[in-house]
Image 1 (cartoon, rainbow, N blue to C red):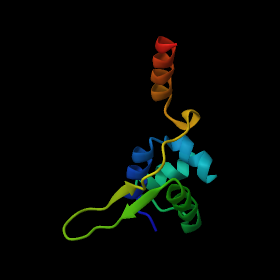
Image 2 (image 1 turned 180 degrees about the vertical axis):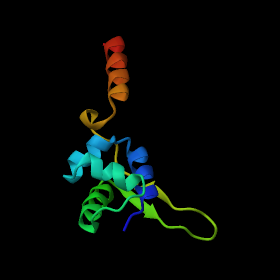
Image 3 (image 1 turned 90 degrees about the horizontal axis):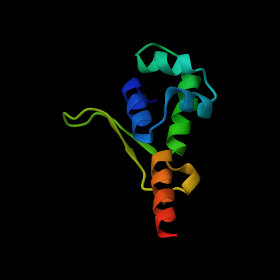
Image 4 (image 1 turned 90 degrees about the vertical axis):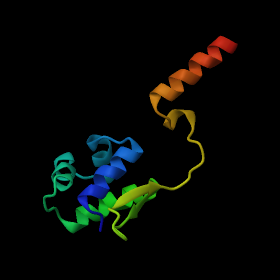
Length: 100
């Protein structure tokens, strides 16, 4: 089961807000916030959140050899234009207009 620190790091790595993760996992935003703060939540809820993050390509790393816990992202193919952050998409649209 993921730990609160894993959850905070995973959201940061994916660039997801609390609201985005709550919608994707089908759980209440306050539940995610409480768990990130270190409070208890139902294990079934944590499993839902963990599955969403695993499907998004997050790998959870446990403490080992004096190093703390962490997360990694699986290598993925480039996202389609609609899935990329708006700033990247906007920059590419500006470049295309300059060329065209």
